Amino acid sequence: MKTKLTTMLVVTAMLLTAAAPPAFAATGSSSLDLDVTQDADGTATVTVTRNGTAVENASVIVTADETYAGTGNYTTDANGTVSLPEPGTAVNVTVAATDSNETAATTTELTPVAEFEVGVDRNDDGSATVTVTRNDTAVENASVTVTADDAYAGTGNYTTDSNGTVTIAEPESTVTVTVEATDANDTATATAELTPADGLAVDVTQNADGAATVTVTRNGDAVENASVNVTADGDYAGVGTYATDANGTVSLPAPTTNVTVTVTATHDGDEATATADLTVEPVQNFGLLVKRFVHDLKSTGVSGPLGQQVSEFVTENNPSNENAKGPAEQSTGPPEHAAVNDGSGDSDDGTTNASGTDDAPGNSEHAPGRQNADEEHGPENEEANDEQNGNANGHDGNADEAESSDDPSSADSSSNDDSDDSDDSDDDRGNGNGGGPPDHANND
Image 1 (cartoon, rainbow, N blue to C red):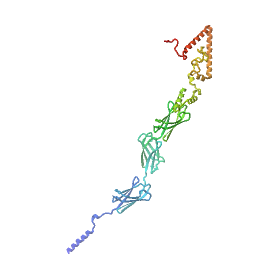
Image 2 (cartoon, rainbow, N blue to C red):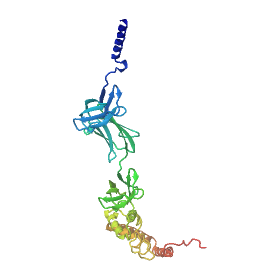
Image 3 (cartoon, rainbow, N blue to C red):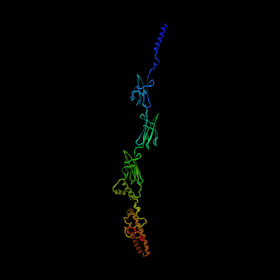
Image 4 (cartoon, rainbow, N blue to C red):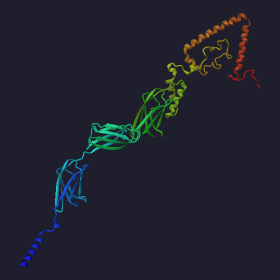
């Protein structure tokens, strides 16, 4: 009996032991997790995990309630992630991940990131325009700070206008600027190189001799073969078209009257214009003025006989045209206190020319300065000369009468004196040109 009872107990214990599960087989239930996060740059990251561990090669499907470039099918990478692009506008997306017959899904809103930007654009005149935008929309009243790596007048603080812009000055030389824009909590920075305007410049300078020099430059450098057109508001020999030399210059003649010139330079499609007043310096010597006129004619390329131009210039500019005292009046003729010959051979001092004619040197009407002086003196001076001659003759006549009454031989003496004067005159004339040594000189 005891044996049967013991056997039954052993069998019962064995049955109970077989019915109980083993301890290592006990496991908790597994799950697939899905997360969607939008990053600062507007993109989104989908992450798939199982029990906190990245799930590689999980299938991800993205759909949206609006047009969105990120919709489609993806596969997670080794990090269990998928990247989605930034939306153009706010959009609701549904993301579903599947792995090992397990699926997880979520819906979230993606929005575009507000892009705050600043740009620097150089203008044709050398200045620059700073533009501040947010999502391509102008930002008014944004703060703009400009710094530079060299001296630059445009550095400083600015505020954008209603167009989101600020204009900064043209630099005198090439410079690199850093522009920082700030609005609300956003900041953007841009760097740009600014250079002086790529433009043509022309300058007109009158020299000390009255001539003028035209200089054509581009960014401070001489421009060769630029076309230069010169016009004037009056008569000016320098009017015309020229080409600059290797120094970028053109020479213009001195004006004969005050004149305003307009100079237009063109080169490679660019044009520059300058206006200048050219003045005439007073010239006391009319001959020098004529010489300058001839020089200017030749310098402008005039060739061939210049007689007609010179004749017209002399006619128009002769100082005598304005009753000015001409060179003949200034330098010819005897001084006022000298005796004047009336052309009869008898001088005012009672003596007679050896020849008794007007052909003696200095008396001929063809003598230098004689003709112009006679013509320009006019009737008034002739009357003055006659009056002077009359007074002188009257005075000499009284003296002769006094000598005659005191010395009866005075007439003979006077005659002899006249004869001696005639001989002396013949000796003085010599070979006819007034040369030769005096009689008392030694002749070896």
